[in-house]
Length: 99
Image (tube, rainbow, N blue to C red):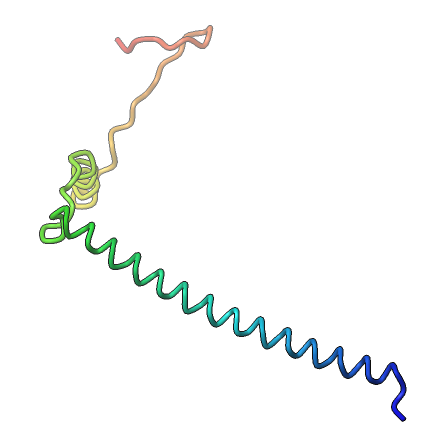
């Protein structure tokens, strides 16, 4: 005859295996659902971008970004450092105007 604790151990091992199997099935289902949601979101995002009309020419250039890009490219081509400004202070530590 098999002792009672052996049956308990065997049943516990089988139960643990069933739990792991259930968790793997749950993970598989969740992964499939997430992939389906990603596909749906991608399609909706593509539709939204196409409906704005920005796909063909891209997003219009921001004037501030264009000015910064021009400044950087001018500095790179001219190889000039920006002019340094000297700030004058008096004895009290206050800023003074340049004469």
